Length: 77
Image 1 (tube, rainbow, N blue to C red):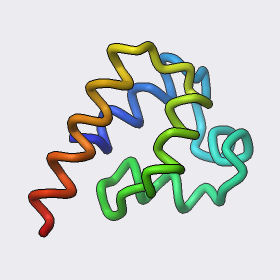
Image 2 (cartoon, rainbow, N blue to C red; image 1 turned 60 degrees about the vertical axis):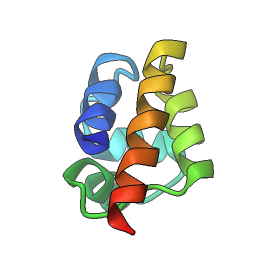
Image 3 (tube, helix red, strand yellow; image 1 turned 60 degrees about the horizontal axis):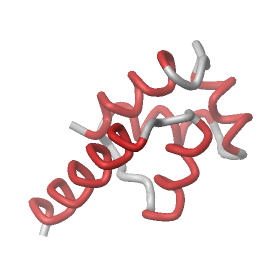
Image 4 (tube, rainbow, N blue to C red; image 1 turned 180 degrees about the vertical axis):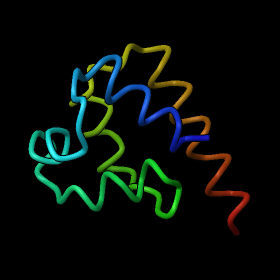
């Protein structure tokens, strides 16, 4: 699930132990980060790109995140 991937990236790669720290770095509210990580909402494609940049995701992690994002968006249709 993308939500679990984002949480893992936030803590492991981004070094943001709190939702608030990640939200401040991304320029969003902590509730947005919480919704992405709980799976309640999906970030927009442009926001996902910014998250992956902000968290310092590797190319492999980016590819995996995008594949998961597309699969979850298609399943929601």
